[in-house]
Image (cartoon, rainbow, N blue to C red):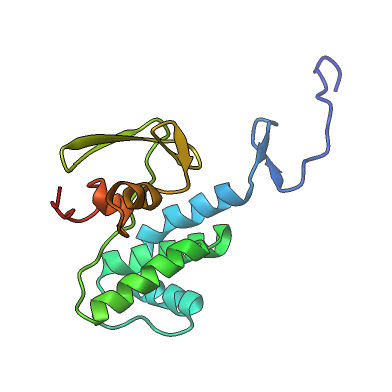
Length: 175
């Protein structure tokens, strides 16, 4: 060992593996997941069917093509490693499936309006302006809990605020 510089040996971090050059490489769950997903396209159809059976507990439907098998397997692997869909998304998908089964048209919930958005609506010759705030809406210098409350104050009848201000569906043109 004379004449050669001796490198100091340090313990490896948990989940790390040494590289060929002595640098510690961390192989966490995301790296392992990426490696597993990258290997999927190289699998044979029989190997994909077997992987499906391991992940889903039953053989895949016979009519599924290779691309669908790959995507479904990749999804399930990611779902198990990172967690599935949140409760709100599951409810949305459940509602969509029920609507489709009943022959209804799918509708997506509207995205919330950014704070500061100004909405204008003419009603019986008068232009009404509402400003969207973080937790409420502002109308004529007062704070309201919802657009529907403002629409009710303007018209004197119950209205869907988003519909009245033209954010959803077709508003009644009574004014």
